[in-house]
Image 1 (cartoon, rainbow, N blue to C red):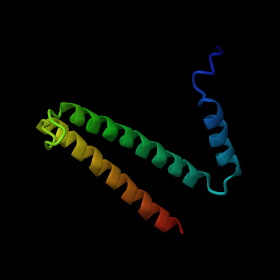
Image 2: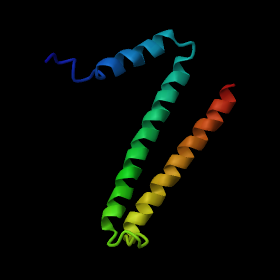
Image 3: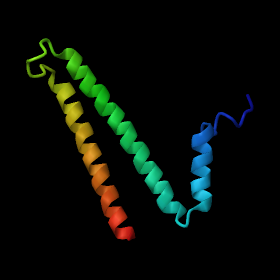
Image 4: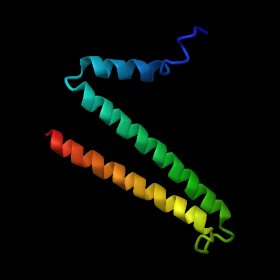
Length: 97
């Protein structure tokens, strides 16, 4: 393994990302779009994991989820972050038009 390989993005993703930046008329907005999509993906995974943990904590399938306050707050916080990130992206997209 070459020393520079650890810094590179994996295969197809790295090539696609570089091609978008080189060909795009607005490289800054492309970077913003990619950053936004990565944030949403990360937050969605975290939310899915938190919901999975809350599902595992439930004792009976028909019951409301009997989870602790900490887990409930974690899910609420992740939901707020997803909503805020989507709202900010929508506003910036509207300003760019």
